[in-house]
Image 1 (cartoon, rainbow, N blue to C red):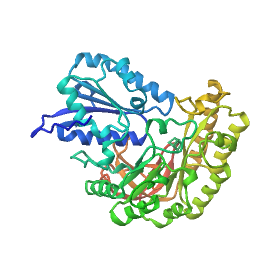
Image 2: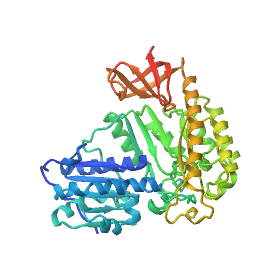
Image 3: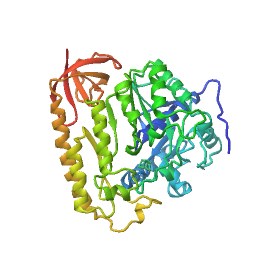
Image 4: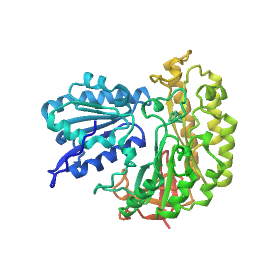
Length: 451
Ligand code: SF4
């Protein structure tokens, strides 16, 4: 079905409330929805009770995330009863996975949009408003791909740090992961479209861009123009005025020497890398289908620190993968002690539909997973605090993002290594890079003073 947006000459002002679950790619898609609906008169609101449209972008990567979506949807029923004209739209991975079942379970939901349907939202929403129809749209191909999923900023405010998706989907099929089933196969976005979007963002105030993809290192496969991820980074350095560039997520198996050298060679590339390891045991990594061994991962870390000694490193770790023994869990703990990550995202394994791991035997009991997660998080908290304390006395350049949440008298920003720094002076404009001496360190942030 192709539906054209009904653009009105002077659209009346309407409001959209957006709630995003899950990853930064979902955040980016939600931002695209706000930009796409802006020409129809929609403005973002943080007050759901006055919204004409509620857009919920969902995540099913972990069971807990999916449960949160259902709980949120349950709370919308009385609101819809009070505001029957309000349209409720569910998008993202849960929408893709459940489709019609969501309409059946939540009779007050109006639109269910799959992961490749975001660019169709304007036409579908107008159709739902005019006809009262309840629709499910789960296209195989996102028409937005053909439009290079570029919709312009449409007057929507740009933040100092802006996300830009460079690819969608994943071909890796890690045995525990639902992403290839709900996001589809890997598709890269043409480099020209990415450069155009970054240039627009810089013109409207962005200083830092975070490039997003499930596996950014394999960017470029399948594109007509021959370009690699390193080629894309070099083009961004050469063709835009961006102050800072980061990317996520990097897959350790595709982290080449050429990419590692970029941390020394490209001035805009921040000295920070998020490199998910998931487990420290070779047997678990093999059953996860991760494509690298513990020793290969550690060798990549050594190489990164050789090329960029000051690099900040973060990672993802999963505990309680099916069959994970106590010894294999200790392999993960030892890997953390060896690498000394600056920060870590850690999770308990949960079965996801369609994945191979969901059919593996020897599931780890919930209480054992919980205990392992606590042990692991306690260890990482010690490491993070000690590394933060090591920062005291260092001089760091901080990109100011705004007023600190902790105190209206302070500004807040991040170092290249991605550490949050607060400092006394609420009047520094967002977007400025200031040089600070670190004077104190806490569990999740640093304190600095101007020099
Ligand atoms: S690399 Fe693995 S974990 Fe990451 S999205 Fe792809 S399949 Fe999932």
